[in-house]
Length: 340
Image 1 (tube, rainbow, N blue to C red):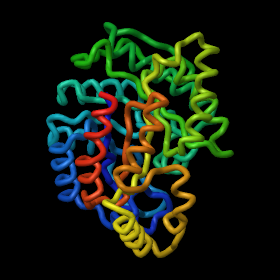
Image 2: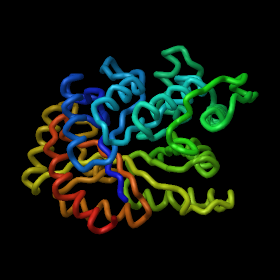
Image 3: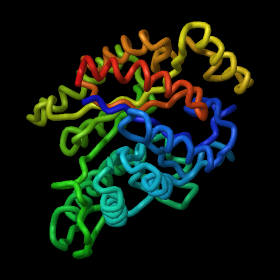
């Protein structure tokens, strides 16, 4: 089954270059509450929350884990997860306990998407007083963290002594509801010179431990190339690439027709007068999807044909739900008819 996920806009993005939420101008808990409730009534499968402590400026953002816990009490149906839960911001043994609790209180609806502290998170990590080691060391930390978390989720109290983390028979009860444990989601980044080496290292972790692989917004051609690179790593590890579930995060601009889409673009441009990212729609389209329902269906089919079974969507007209409603009424039923 194709999992259609909705990314909750827990930060305003108007005037913030590439902020995913160009029409969100303020942080309003009542608006977020309404969004979760309405998405819960639609045919989306999951809801996703970013995990950052701050943005690149004084833009407000809610902390991810407490927000997810709050959302889990509003929706009784949707699966819930973080987008790149940053290992550097919590000790892995505490992460194991917190996520076990979330899995219990949500009746097994938690997706565990852990990140090693990718290069773009350095400022928030160090400003909050945490260490930000080299790429190789952060990957080592991530690997040790995954080992510890899985041990604590599945074993009796056990000790672990690593290079970066040590635990001494911590008690973790109750265990997660999902068995043998919540699946491990790990993500790579849209390719660039700044993250190329990071992606190479994270591919190794995905091949060793990943149940799911997610990638940040990426066009279909680049996605094909990234799949080839990751598949080679899987071959090196003697692991069948088909055992890996695949997920893509995308920004989406959907309208009833071309006139509707142009209207939304103009509104976004007016709300972002710096004319940085959202003034360059040609560049934006290289990594994201826009169009009427038929065009969106055609574009998403290309990802699905490559094995993608989860999408995390940032709707650019959010906090309006117009785009999500069109998607729910005309895109989800058609893709379900084709692939479920």
